[in-house]
Image (cartoon, rainbow, N blue to C red):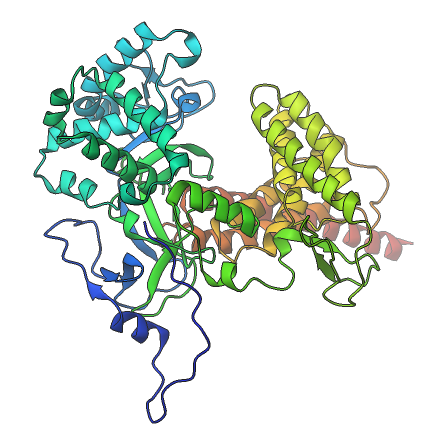
Length: 571
């Protein structure tokens, strides 16, 4: 993983020379990287090139259309986060088949679970070392809360055992060592976390001296720091098919991809129906938009719905660079991630005032925001509440929901737009909490509240993410599915046209339209050849059911009208 190139300056081409395309310029300033026979996962449509300023990256050799699967590979190593160890298979990352069907637990370590005997047998070559390490760790743990090592420690353990299993001179091990290391430029703020991770890893492996690390290819303390640096810089989030973060993984071929806050590609785990478990978890690199030959494929290392300040902070802390992409170098006058509605209600928006620059004007009518202190206080309180509610989401969901319910009106009354932080993140968390509570107490009121939250979240994403982005597609699909849920107590009186959500046939029609739009975007975000992945299939099936239901409504209305006409004629 490398930094994104800075936004180009608007320079005029030399006199008498035809201007080059950006792709031609990129190819002229880069050179192919010799992979020494490694990275067989890379398809013929891309190549690894290197520039003196920006390092290695993935470049296209042929045109790619939006929704194309650029690369699909099973990560070298993947592990589940501790809360998900009993909910997903530790081999293929499949969820439990049904809520009532439990996974099979390893009888020895009693820590990892599998969806089938096949997965358990396939994973044993990895787990046989891990199994005893997990047992020893648990036996020496001071409390139950730390009886399982972190996902980072477990992932590093699998990397080292994998290097032993495959051989230190194997392509597998070489690909791990070819990943970028930032050891030489580590910031002092990273020393403590790297040192803690190194000590935890040594304890997990059960080694007592540096010499015992040599069989893993670690001949010095510097080699160990290099390994940890490569790991922290090149690890991807392992997600479910619906984008829930469930663990971490290492995929060296995909780690060549550089960062941009306006990426042209995205990483997903589609879990396409019909894919054998031996090919899962399948990490897919998907084109978000058309990419011309010779262009660099870029992904985002961070959440691009966050404001520039938070994106830059995370990139500096984790990846040790300052992003200079177009979005960061030349942000719009009013960034929708940090925006307020015009105080004069002209329909325009204003930039969110800051402590160091508290003068904010509407981008449309130039009206000045006067309640600056109130806005800054609301944003500060909102961020604190978001952090608190997020930490309570699974420990105390009722308390988390109380926080989101109380804080969202404060942020809204302060004038924040739906796409502004922290309102967007708070709305999403509120939606998740409401949906989780529906299984216990489904009422018309609770269902409608969940629909309203889903609609606001989806609307906020429209201004931030391009069409086809998987996060935006998933949000549309969730809105459509909620609208399609049978109403527990639909109103007897006709629903006013202005009321949201509507009831009866208009509600079903809106559900259908939302799901159709979601399906179109899922085909891009999760890959056309994947059929939009597992979620794409679910949405397609929901569309078919709604078409039948709407057909029955239309038939019923038609029959009523015909009966009325016949009754009139009979008179």
